[in-house]
Length: 565
Image (cartoon, rainbow, N blue to C red; front, top):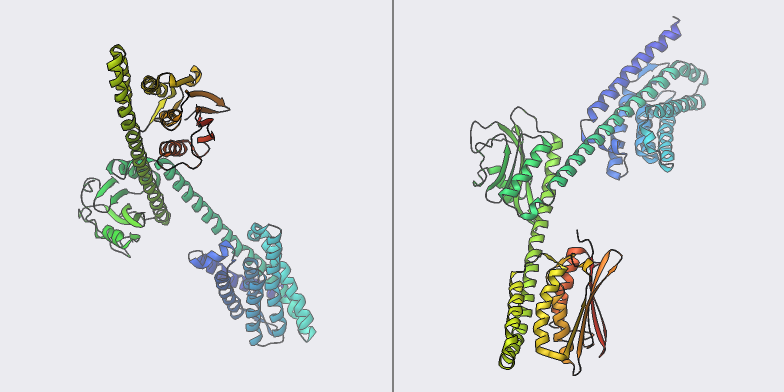
């Protein structure tokens, strides 16, 4: 082997050793938060600052560890400038290259100015490539090792050209380039490609972990949805705890309220008994201070407060929050011989947020149910006294004039009141609603006689459809109380049903036209309650619409889904 080839080979080996140092540092960086701006591509000033400091140090180290040859320094400085430009963009690449170049210039030598210019140019060139790929929506190509190799190779060729153009005397510059060109182009290009390959692998791993975390969180959310709507109690939390235990594969799961243990599944369930008061000081701290407590048994001591023989060695305690206050905790445990994974730490906090939202939703549903019951009781109170007073007066009059007709009227009144008292907040069929209305109308027809005419036209095909209790009856009562009862001539009420695509339209119409344009709160209270209930159950596109032609007609229409499920 000729002396020139031997020198070149030796230089390649020495530069490869420097490159190896870069790669070792890159591996160490993958274990620290410093790598995050590199993995995510720096877009914010703090991230760019981290890149600037990190790769500026790489440039300076590359110069210091370089190999003296022909009065110059063969080095791996260019890797720092090129990688900073690719990951941070033109400005970052330029500043890192400038810093590395100025440091090299301060060391002197006949190539000092050429090296300062070339290092700055390499950082700027790599940054421009970053900008080009960003504008063409090919940013992922920045992590392609082959593309990085080519970019670094072109940048190193630029450096050799700048040395030939700037360094003097030219003869020495030419001799230097002949010696260092191949080793520096090969090693720096390969090193940049390997460095980027490590960052790409880290991105891939982070994406996989993120996907796994998201999949677990979604699975837990899917399996637990609706459970806590029935209340934050031992039965429901036991179901939640078992689902979390199955999906996370931790050693144990516990859920508490502010005072006691509600559920415990897994290792240690022989002495962690649901229903007992909270005894762990760590849990009480998490509740009182509203903070996440992670006791890994090393950095923060963990010891089961109930048994010295407990196998559990670490615990993550996350507060459950509702209405800006802590209402309990969810706790994940691992055995003493098992490591608590970072994935489970993040997942535990996500689970707590999901459960907190479900608890809030459960409280909302409970309050909504209580409101519905209160509104129905209000409807009971609104319907019964007024109707009962008039019905009893009617019965008293009929009993005196035609006693034989009083008995069936009493039976209708009894059937109406019995149904009124037995009805809950659920749904009934349209047929049952019409039967209830018929009992009511029988009394009213006896009261008004020929002054009231009622026509009901509801085809059999619609009578099986479900609707909320007290949907039509308040409308019919309103039509009589505020409509036909005010007329001197005969009052007419018509009730009918028809379909509108997938919807059912129920209409109650009277010939009074007495519905006010701006009704008082008491006048429209029953209708408003019916309207709100329908919208809350089926959606905003359903409910009541009212149309009134003064002194001629009032029409109230109810829109319902034909298939309520």
